[in-house]
Image 1: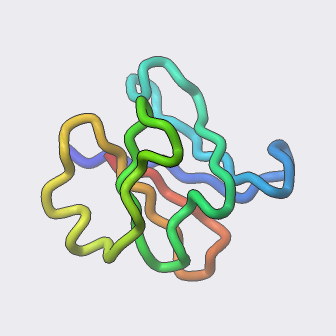
Image 2: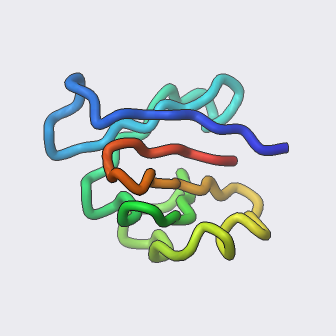
Length: 91
């Protein structure tokens, strides 16, 4: 099953962060995830993200087509829209 949650680079977090809204039932009860701009994938690409790992231990960004083929257990896929403003988390 594929679940998607959307975000905008909203006014609520500091301008230097993206806030990813977490769908109910996912993320161990977390309601959102704040990412530094360098943590977000480049526009039009994806990044596997493990919520239980430190930022430095996260895998690099890559093409969405290959990263979404076999999502490892416990991983989220962060997808950044081509316009660079929206970020989606896919699980």
